[in-house]
Length: 416
Image (cartoon, rainbow, N blue to C red):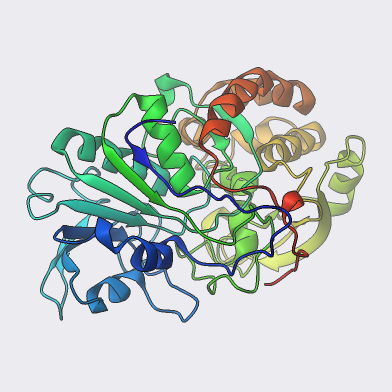
């Protein structure tokens, strides 16, 4: 454990009753007010960071007597969470409080020294996905680096993430480092933001005052729990917990417009479809190599944007059935290989608007694309990233703050 990281790890005994669930922000305000005393506070957050009563963390901090909130910072999609994917946002000023709202997805992605002049401590709280291509983790890295360079304290107010046990996909090749691939880990890395911050401090060799305010009563659940806050989309297309879980299974659709991924529907990131796709035939092809942890259902829907705007599409809906065996990136490669087996490599890679360079950036390497284009079987592609994943897991394990749900004495429950 890095000596500059201050945490309050979970130490519950299996024989004691499970504690009431508490977000990291609530734990911070109730248990560590000393971390905030006489400090100028900058909050890096967005509208999805709400508590069980629907109150945004910015409001909570503003209301607490004695806390001096001097500035706000917004990641991609903006502090209000309304900007589209890839849409740049501008600095602003809070209409009521009069404090600056700095954009970390505009002219700059990393807090500048000028932005931090009136800040002693940065509190970071996003609703993240635990997925490398989802840019909030890139913002986390840049904040840690900026804090290390300027001597600022960083506090992570931890929140639940989808797939806290799922580790899948190729590790980032440094040659493909971009803002959708900025951490030296796999596409799906199975850590909360607090855990990720601690891991990044070690992986990047940073020296800073990092403090993690862990959740209480959290057991790495793979399904949403009733005590958790309402799901607020952290970006316009991540409309549900299910969309968040399947993000790395279908995000390739951003680079391969031949396949729609339901971005204009209620099932964004949960479907793949095309007017030329025969869902039943594809199901038969995929049955040759069953995909663990997921059920594929035929679906017909209409898309409102993209290559097939206004067209009814045939496709498959992805439904997770077993989180223990579900591997989202492996599923992506299996689907693509199955489609290519039926319709040929050109069906995916020669359609108008295809962006192979963006595919490589999302996967953090060109090896997956090149293997697919060479018709390499999916199991071989998936096997190729396993040695690196094993090495990653060894470093990840040093920074985990929460025990798995299998050790949780309370029964698991499902909640939408």
